[in-house]
Image (cartoon, rainbow, N blue to C red; front, side, top):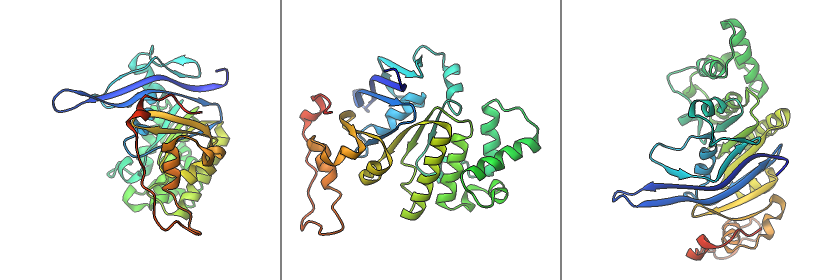
Length: 286
């Protein structure tokens, strides 16, 4: 695809059970992210959303057994790269915002110490004063009101929304071409979530970054993303434009939508999501 930023073709990920049997977690996933596009990935917990994103960055756990026909970033073959060269892409051309800053930020390091480490790994070679100015500027860019104070704070001194803004500042400071956001608003209330998404949207537009947005929140994905991939049991069962998700045809997607009842005139009985093992062998509904 000419305008493809990142490509995943035929990704399989499995883990060995206690008796040595390989249990598939991702099955033949193929996805493409275009330049400047916001691709949402939705599905239940355990459907393989996060593993798909981590595979692209080379962040799968050592015990994972995985293979792929192709993994590419801007046409560059990631599978053919040496591990050290691929690691250099993380934090520079590819970045990932994890789910909860309380678990993603180091509790015994200040924000400035962690961001300094990030800049150094990106190859920034500046004195302490210049590096401090760069850190403060990155925090200001995500609309943190008192960046000097936040830079000297420890993670436990920050609110959830503030911690997530720090994570965004760290991940987008190098202007990555691809950004993977793994449930970046799940631990936040509605108002703070909207503020964080506005910051994220601004950063994407500023750097012309492609976004993979992993979430359980279908209404949020429909309003924030351009395109949606629905995963079930490690497979992509349906892809469509985000605005067309309400008209999705696959029974699993319909079940997910019906599990989000409207606040106005809700149904008397909540529907139960029914699953069919045959879905694991079906082609993708488009």
